[in-house]
Length: 150
Image 1 (cartoon, helix red, strand yellow):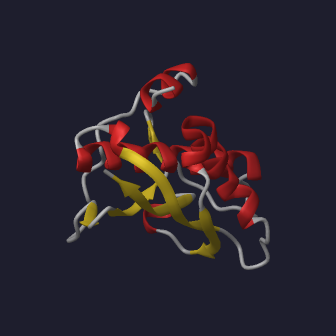
Image 2 (cartoon, rainbow, N blue to C red; image 1 turned 120 degrees about the vertical axis):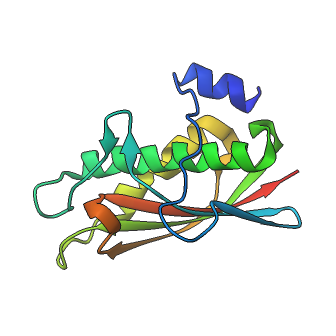
C-alpha cells in the first residue's frame, strides 16, 4: 500500500512544510539520506505549548509528538517532491519540554514513533533518542529526523 493511501486511511493529509524559524534550511540531502531539521509541535490552531511534569499530560505530549512527525513527513515530501520517495525512517531525536524530575520522555516521543509505524509500516521503524530540554517558544516537543529516500 502506498504511503499516501496509508495516510488517507489514518485521516491525515500532509500540510505544507513549515518554513524555518531562523537561519537554517529545513532539510539537507546527502546521497540517499535526508536530514530534516527539528520540527516543533504545531497544529491547525498554532503552536502546541506545554511543559511535561508541569500541567501537561503524557497523552497530550504524545499528541504533540505525533504532530511533529506529520511535519517531518511534510518536509520529506517538500524535499523530494513525492512522499513515495521515502524508503526508511532511519533515526529520530525527540526533545521534550519538561521539568527536571520528569522521566517519561520515551512515552511522549512514542506519539511520533507509533504514528510513523502506523503510516509507513516497516519503513517507519527507526532508531531513536528522547531527551528533556527547554524548547523554543514554549512548545511541548521538537523532533528531528534522518530518512533514507530515493
